[in-house]
Image (tube, rainbow over all chains, first blue to last red):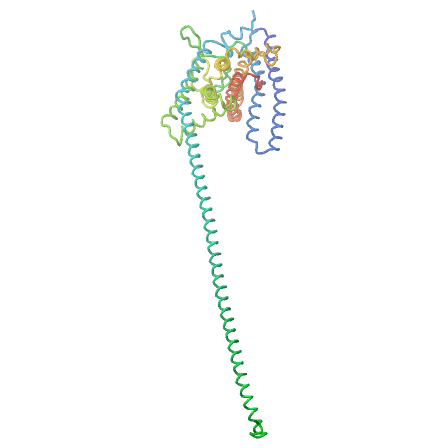
Length: 81
Length: 156
Length: 251
């Protein structure tokens, strides 16, 4: 394999996960904050809020996972090698 | 050269699609049907039956409770009626007793009145009689006195 | 250490070897399949079948033991399907959604809990069935078929009118959605499971003892949530196909 392609692939893989983590990170922070606010305002709804929170966190998490999949492709199944 | 299909047909790597995919799908569908037969249907039936049983029992209990409430209400009503009746009986008895007492008292008063009247009448007649006798006596006495004073001839 | 050769084996310590993209190929009638995936999936299927047989062998009105547990599982998936699809139409979909959830859940947890790697196979290594992209794509495609089937059975060809809502301008996006749905479903599940496995493997590579335990616990949690998410999304897509008008957007 071309060493240039290898280097580019490794950098791209790192960037893919790193950049993909920014947005969901912010989103998850906001989401958790709002959930805590909701629980503080209405403690009896805690169970429902927690369930919804976990589900939405999983959805946001999957955005980072897409970035991870891209980086896995670059590292382990590189189409340009 | 490099092509994106390398990603999927490459004879290695993570993204290696082959006959595993359709076979896994068929296997999963078979699992769905199998589990439907041995898991979802029998246990679902049990769950539904239990829900039905609980509902029925709840309904029965509710019916019984209603009946009991109705009986209690009826009993309460009867109690009220009986109480009212007893109240009225007592009132009647009291009234009757009152009447009897009044009648007796009246009678006694009447009797007393009568006796009093009779007595006063008797007293009156006796008084009159006494006056009468006294009048005769007074005449005789006055005649005697006159005779004594004037003598018997003169006195005539 | 070779990075891009497709299949690779990192060996630092005898215990901590990390294999990615290695498969145990079987040839059945000219078809190539990944043997390790089928071996573990048969294990998972056997586990499910044995559990359901044990639960329904002696059914009683007052449940106890395994029957109680499986009834809990059934009520859980029923509740899931009911919440997403709605009281009226959820019943015929309970087997599909429930099996999706149970299969993925048991697969994920078997991958996280059982020491598959102690069993030697000629090449590759045993892992959760959902660790293979073929499995997750198969499940996602079945989900797509399921919601198409639901839409067609409910409304016939009128199902295609959904693509013109709310305006015909969105037609390409609506068509594109049918492709992104299975793509995101399968890659989400696959990515999460592989990520867990890789993180644990890399940590074991660095510190073989104790340090990976919290990450493993997190992996258990994540894999349970992913099973729930997959089943919930499948139910939500089916509901959308049944209802027509857009529905809530999950991506």
